[in-house]
Amino acid sequence: MKLDNIRAAEAKLLLQTYDRTPILFVRGEGVHLYDESGNAYLDFLSGIGVSALGYGHPKVEAAIATQSRALLHTCNLFYHEGQAELAMRLTEMTGLDRAFFCNSGTEAWEAAMKLARAHAALLRAEGKKVGTKFLVLEHSFHGRTMGSVSTTHKAKYREPFAPLIPGVEFVRFNDVADLKAKFSDEFCAIGIEAVQGEGGIHAVSQEFFATAHALTQQTGALLLADEIQCGMGRTGQWCAYQHYGILPDVTTLAKPLGGGLPIGAMLCTDEAARAFTPGMHGTTFGGGPLACAVAIAVIDTMRQSNLLAHVRETGAYFQTQLKSLAARHPSITAVRGMGLMVGIEIESEELAKAIAAQMLERRILINRTSETVLRFLPPYVIERQHIHQVVEALDAILTTAAVVIGATRHDQ
Ligand SMILES: *Cc1c(COP(=O)(O)O)cnc(C)c1O
Image (cartoon, rainbow, N blue to C red; front, side):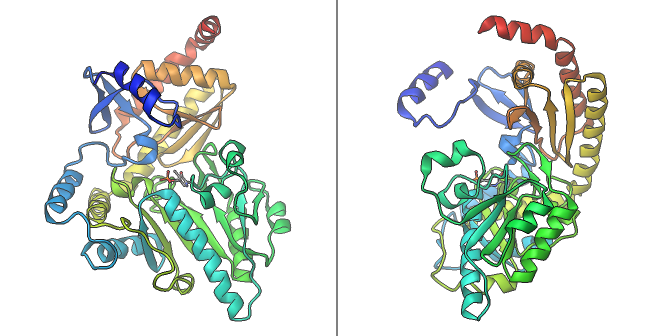
């Protein structure tokens, strides 16, 4: 089918949940995606932080080929080789004790929320005073299922689905006084993204994170770190919380974990894990042999090629380049990020939209989040030449920005 036919068919046949860009991708190689006419696009989005090793990585392809010939699915009533092997790696990487596997980010966060509730119930049974409420941050994003969306801040994502789960409160981002005022023994957990992704690439402060950790430790509530976007090496450490020297009770991983295949994981301490006993939680597909084999290949590849150091180095270089760009173009009002999780704040939504559209015309994939933030989540395997290409394109676009905005206004 041609793109026009696909668009017409989707408009009639699919729920209209996405506002897609009209490009038809048919294959990928390295850090490039190719459309049906063979045009190459430099990918600085990675399918929203997923394709960390780029496309067509030989180790990922080999793991898929080998495992698909051996065994695709067993269900969680039986053993297979993958889960223990993957858990060994993830516990070492995260500093936590145990893993639960699922299929996506939102499922990992649901597992974390259910664990927090069950753990609080266990503590209550043991005579402690711990409530059932969740304290999460303004501008948070934790996913789209009913529990996750209840802890997600944006009204557009939440309000159509009311009533949501009760007992969720939002604390102002990085406002330590608000955190201290709102937290009490009525809460079973505080949930934090060390670096907010959908919220516009904002890192929590050391003091805020440390205060949340201390508060939860006082009552026995769990500190839940959502590392679905900022984890698995994206910021140059396996987990973004490692930059802070803070160990949460629970963390959630997904996006890049399966190198493009869907897999999610929740990791937690032995103490928190006491709350789940057989039958309390589960999944048919979660932690299947194929997804585990690929996640193991992703991790082993990252380790063998010392990719965390590469992320730190290229990320720092990218930010330096963007900062000197911002010095020349005052319409860039901020450059933020950690490792290869980077955002630039543009002075107006209109200009941010125009820049994103112009980048696409130059066949560079980026994304706009929180209205005025251009977000960059490139594959970890990018090189300096790719950074130069992106920065030069931004420079050229910003130089003619006034003209571009004029043209956009004229179009409307
Ligand atoms: C993407 C994301 C999720 C949800 O993951 P899905 O796989 O889309 O369900 C949750 N939390 C954060 C921080 C995310 O970036």
